[in-house]
Length: 135
Image (cartoon, rainbow, N blue to C red):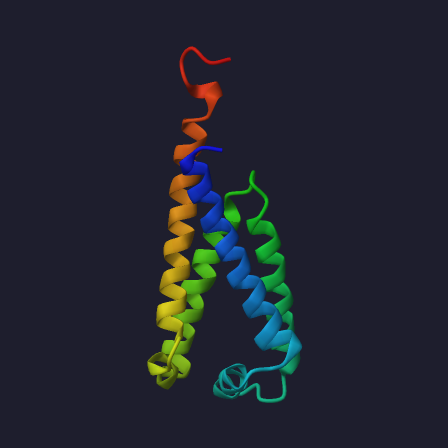
């Protein structure tokens, strides 16, 4: 595996871990106080099922990020991270100044999506089948 493929898989695996962890721990194993605050901000204080559904969706996205031939989960991941960042900024802006807040996490996640997307394109163009003189 060449260096570009290693970068690509490190980015995808890191994204998969991030989505799996945030789907499992603060949503499915125990509903975190931050999740509860966001539900309350949306007027859904008693809709814990919504956080659980989001947790399952994040686990599914994490699994899809590990499927090499699928590029669209990278775009979905970036869109979800951007959408959630905007949602927090609008609904609960006080969370944007917490330690390990949505700004730092989501921007880093979007950067990983970009790295995985760009390295996927370059890695595909540099595969042995696309290099002159290789079978």
